Image (cartoon, rainbow, N blue to C red; front, top):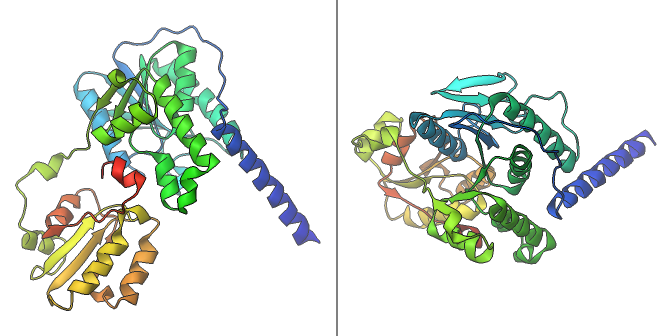
Amino acid sequence: MEALECGSRRDVRQKRRLESEMRVFEGWTPVLDAVPYTPTPRTVLHFLTNSLPYTASGYAQRSHSLLRAQSRAGWAVHAVTRQGYPALVGKLTGRETENIDGVHYHRLFVARLPSGMDQRLQEQTAALLKLCLRLRPEVLHTTTHFVNALVVSTVARALGIPWVYEVRGLLAETWASSRPGSARHSERHRNFRRRESDATRCADAVITLGEAMKASITEEGGCAPDKVELIPNAVGGMFLDTPRSPAEARMDVGLDPDTLTIGTVSSLVGYEGLDDLIRAFALLSPEIPNLRCLIVGDGADSSRLRNLARELGVSDSVSFPGRVDSAQSHLYHQALDIFVLPRKNLAVTRTVTP
């Protein structure tokens, strides 16, 4: 009986969470009253999903590069991560404020997050407003997806300042890519795309990565083309130094220099097509005895890809070093004789740049 009661309570909580999420996807927006406000010139606050030093993803690296560039341009640069981060990713030692390369990262700690998405976003909106009243930015900047835009647009409207929306991906298409083809015709997908389009149209300026993404934002999403700017992904730091030879780079990271190495550095997710890379490698390897495959990165598909290599009998020739330290990332790129980009032919990969 007790087990049934516990199960029933879990079911009720799950139902409430789903109802809360549905409200957000169907049009719910946080609410704030207008606040008398005088901003500090050349001060910007970025609202981020995650950041260095707790997350070493491409998202975090791009954010930090943009923040450093703004700092070098003479702006006072601040960033704040979503409520509960970095504890949400298992890092319990974060400090309320951290300075990394001249960028001030702020954390929104809470004892307990509300269970409903709308309640969390309303609480997060109030917390961001409180931080703004202390830091006094004259512009706010956030990134996909639309829940970040809901928070930032509400605060910007309350303060009477502009805000920028940076579209780094098409999250509705990413969501659909791991589901049956019918997902792209579902109500959730339609609502997801609609809310993203609302965010781009509402923002004072929109930044994205490439021409295909800009076309999606303007032609499908209805955003005015003249307010969309391109800031492509790029490289810096040690990637700009004279590269090592592939054999030298392999020695530097502990791999056999006397091989022909193909592979990639990527997120290990389904739409990247890494299963096709492993299958192609399994076909080629009997004909090229010194051929090796190197797949650098981590993600939801990691276990499946390792299992596939075992099933195909090539696990001894396929290396999965996982997520590597950013100080060595350039060496893993250089260690490849052939860099492979085996992405699936999906809406998300046709539009979003690698």
